[in-house]
Length: 225
Image (cartoon, rainbow, N blue to C red):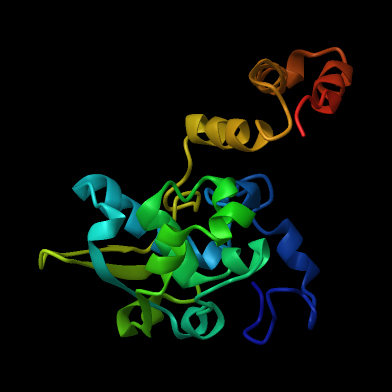
């Protein structure tokens, strides 16, 4: 086992014995995370929570008076930018991502492009998002990046929910269909639907192909700009 002073990144006191620990019986790859959303991982539970409320209750963004996000202190300190001016800043902004999740599907990477950065619905709602350090969420950090979210509607209704494990984590894994859908969504930016389907088909039977040449050819067949 790694001693108490060992850093996760291996920068101090390396322990090669860990490489053989449970060899053949436990595979780290089975505990990896798949990013279900195109922005900072620490914001995923928040986006998932808001998106779930929007879908479940049919929330219309024009009816939202305000929204609150309770999460760990670090996230509140680092991700509070309200009006990001470029894509990467938007992907690290909790107010912006929260607004995206309350207006549209936060899995869509196009919602972090130039058009979205100037979308009045998203930008206006981002200014209504309040962040705060939630003591309960802090107890789960850093092993879990939980979020407790609340939506206050103009009609007086208050909707809230908590998500501790984001979609794509070992505790809440993506299904094979969800992974395929993510690939389709991203690959469609540069490939036609038929080409995307061909790539998926080749990948799913790659162990039976005589070579990877067909897959390499399909991946290079860019048809969209």
